[in-house]
Length: 364
Ligand SMILES: [Zn+2]
Image (tube, rainbow, N blue to C red; front, side, top):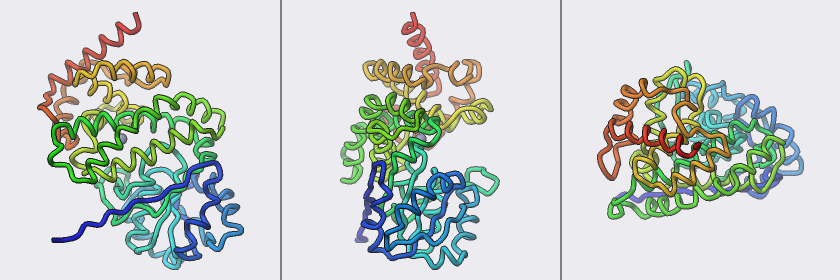
């Protein structure tokens, strides 16, 4: 029987997280090349150079990832001398830059470390990447052999990033526990040990957001690193990301909230003006309504109002008349392959309408 290997990344979080580079990275060599986003590198360059001034690990170059998480760009990057000669890769930026850079490291079999600069996705801890064509059209999911060796979360960098990313990251994070537990319901017998742990860990994904979300947004607006930002960033990057690493990403990682996002992108207003995490957060309310988890719905609703996350169709500029093709498409999405009971377009529509009524009652 083939042996399975599971790898877990470590992490450091705090205002001066980058100062741990020497302690964490020195065993892997002395030359690190940064591959990252343009803005991300601008914002972190001084911090990174300062943190490695006294370190045996030196940054040999800062290289732009070319603007898309594309297989073609990864191929080009791995031909560059500074990349070839590096002992390790520092992946710096948001989801796309990190996904592109981790692919480069994977191809060259070099250890890689991630430095997330915005708290909107868990790309920094995940072996799974989302890849696009160079014209920015979605291409494929791809899982590299290993997750990063370590994640460096500077709360200073996260606090200085535009708060809209944190807002969307919180919105996306609100789906994790609800979707994972719904997908895995009544499947206890089938879950591997890692998946059982992933489902259990998803229990820790909601409460920190409810507790610290609003404070973190206030602190981010003032560019002020804080405990709230740290708690929320850890939740988005580490808790949520580890759940994604531990459960089968096709079976249990997403459900109705992501199916709705993936189908709503057919509406131009969603595609043009609404963020992934924003739409997913709304979809989570629809799932809670459909599954009749009314206590949780009340708590989420209250929190969303404080966060200004969407709670009704109008918040996403969507009308009831536009729903039918969206819901027909939603039930065909892979996110709904693993469900505890059949979900039809009519059931989703009924839940959406019930949620509209819930909004009206709550306003009254
Ligand atoms: Zn998501």
